Length: 216
Image (cartoon, rainbow, N blue to C red):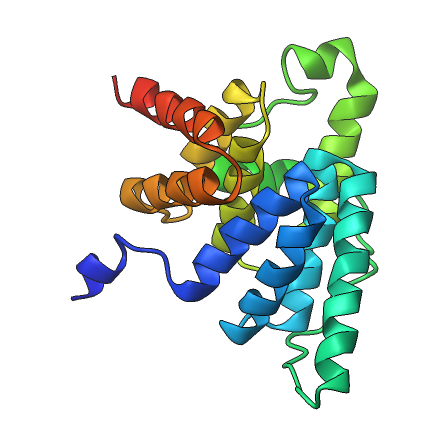
């Protein structure tokens, strides 16, 4: 039974995927209803906040901020209706470590199960500044909060990347990382079904092509 359950996404996982895809594409109208559904599925207020904060690293501050403002509207409307949602774990704001780059590099090693050089080859050597932002902010500051598990974070990232055009290489990388956190191939296929239903079929097919090439 446990193995069978791992082949499917829970209601909360489906909400994470849909919320992330709609945030990444800026579809605030449908995002609003999906945020409401996510709370009904049992996601906490802080879990959703953390998803929307993390996504700024993948789809930019404007869409992250728009999504957070939309979520604030949803939360306020639910309070007005007398609905009490679970706040969830406290979100870590400060990350006081001596070497954030090293912290982020080690997190990335856990996620990829691959040694990470300093700087990262290619883009990191060409632009050490972006490599520092990647390690010190995303994989250190953002990932320092334990409101979300690594698996939840990767589920959000995979869905967001799959929803946006032109990101096949990044999607491939995060599918691999997601599988390292325990996300199954069938669950990833379900994410792409959500992309087809909430974004469009073309994007879903492109994402499916990425997964298919990884299996060859």
